[in-house]
Length: 142
Image (cartoon, rainbow, N blue to C red):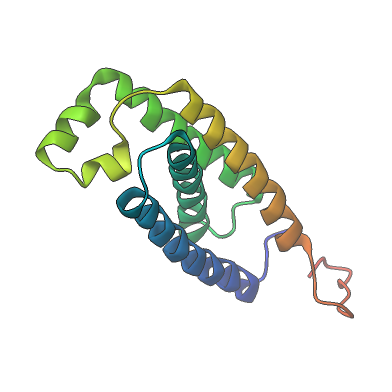
């Protein structure tokens, strides 16, 4: 059963607000902190979160597991695209492209992306299935 329109709208608005916060945090990590293993991992986790939230914004009816699959596929595809060297070349010409496409392949990034997305799928599933206290579902599932 599809979620009612107000719940989809709320999910989309919450995802948009969270996406703005995630992008701000990612830009802050990129611009203000030294390049270390910890900041690289943080950046990867924020990238995966941004991909997940973008899918929710574009398709709020899609259940969390499918959102995770789509955003995970995006992250893996972008990481594998780095093996071609094209993102590195694009970044040299247009540095903001590095924020979207990265530069060089790192297998650890794949692990961070997938772990982050698994956590987000779990959190999203809990939130999307929860109802305010005292509200019970009707027989039609709403």
